[in-house]
Length: 229
Length: 395
Image 1 (cartoon, rainbow over the protein chains, first blue to last red):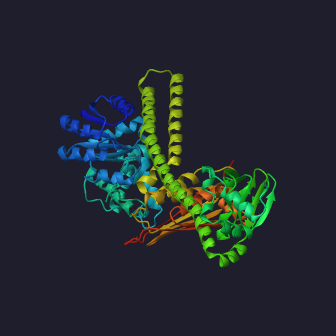
Image 2: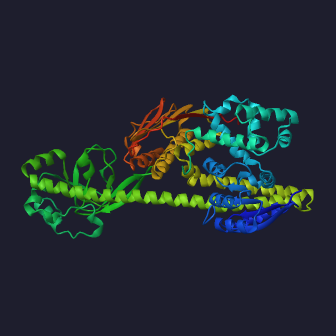
Image 3: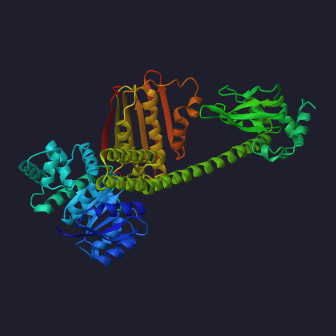
């Protein structure tokens, strides 16, 4: 098992403590640094070269998104788990702007289930993309209200697959969650990728691309604002 | 001394020392000569009223202006379905000037607090007077204008205060969201962890689980409250997203004893552009109030809401097929905070807009509004439609 070196940044002391306690239950997770604002986070990241940075979006001095950009600039292989109290698709797009691999966007409400944080760290460490399931559900609902959304061409099962894929789950996990045999899951996920036109990229990239595609589709929804563009 | 003749009255008026509290509603009689005042008061009718007698009342249809010679009156204005005392006025005060000027309905209720003597002048008599004494008439009207002018200035100030208040609410909501809710989440995570790693027996685990459940529920409840204070979505995503989210949320909670309700929301021209923040919050709250009224009072089954942002204006409509309400009971009902209607109108009028509320008992109610906006060079041609359904409560 690889050791995963983690940097934590959040302006709430309670949150920092909670994250640390949770992550340290995993024997291969090692919290190497803790920061209370974005600037300190970037500083420590450059100093310590962590594998994964867990960042809150709303932080003083420099926010999580900006901090992530700066970290990636100097440590291109760093993985990011962004945690936010806001299910803002603009933020999600901003996060995935530099490429979706190794990035997670979680909602604070979801990480009350402690397993989620651990799962996200593991998934991004392997290069996957994780979107908070609640966020994904919202996006799907929003999509479906618009008749020209590409999602309409997916069957209900395929849509469920896409949601789980966007949640950063690999086929094995999806098989457990959806209670389907692994072969069927593999087939379905492949179908989804083909329908969304992403079957050319390979492996993890493919799924990340599907997620990105999923998000970009939502910009066609009239009331989702393109933050900052 | 009872004032009866114009001469006596003028003496009385000119001998008044204007104390601050009467100044806002009084004329500067010294601007007129004795004979001018005598002439003016001469065309009026002297009335003696006992205490606790209405001088003007809600919709009494009168349009006279009154000069108070003796006694004190109380001015009551309608606020939230109640009459609230706004001022106590004494000799020298002018009353009923608004209806006198615009022939509209009386804006306040004036009750005598003690036996009073007033001089009442009708519009017709004043018109006749103005032909013979144009200069006096003009100077009088200027002074009445001044009284209204200072009221208007106060109103503008109040509008500014409202904006400041919304900013405060926004800051409060953000603080609660970013700090308190976040901290509650952290505590919830810790409890969750405690359950996993500690060596607790089954009973203790159950207790821990329950406690955590309550903590999560508290946080969720706080989320609702914060949303009610100032929705984050309004800040981050704008009016349409926030209102859609509100409807989604509100309609997913059934209300006991309610018939099934369907709300159709159509929007046009919003695209990715945003209205000014101050307009967004006022429209949001107005629409929210409209929906609350419908859910709580109307027993409607179908509601159509339309929001259209055109090149230089905003048009909005909320139409329901509920039981309506009696508008004829008093036009004034619209101006009272009956169902928060006055507040809704205010939120629109504050931005130079108009809100027309029409209702018919048994047929339904429609709110039709309009607001001018800054000219847009590019008008998105997008449109969206969504339907929200609230099922009847089974219980």
